[in-house]
Length: 178
Image (cartoon, rainbow, N blue to C red):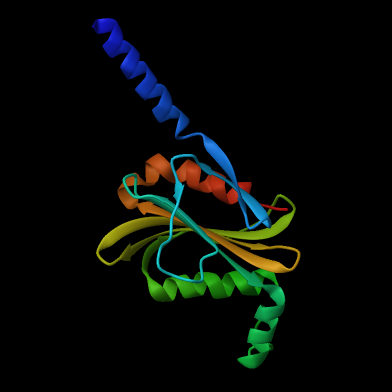
């Protein structure tokens, strides 16, 4: 009986460890991300999301958004903002990150990191915000692809930040346009 219990615990422990290993997902054949295998595809409200993954029990969420660079350029022109914004990663990230701050109560944030990820210009931001009474920790990235701007955002409860921060950062740095 002891051997059976020990065997069951070993199998459970090994399977739990495997769920933290990354899996590579392809998003519409346009790019890949390495995400923890405990995340499953979901359908959160919001048509603007290209793809969504989550694990509600672990309070870990991920969404991506893709926007055509031509459509963004046209949007700048239509809004009379071509003088203020260029059609590049800096302007796009400024708009995206400012938009986030307008919609949530950010109480702590990092400086925006200017970097290159797998050959693409990218901007990264980490922040804590209060949303509907919950304290959340976010990582957000904006990437300039060949003809598309991409956003990746992950979030969890602030109390789980230490547990998931490395995995969230790894997701941001795993982005690869195909």
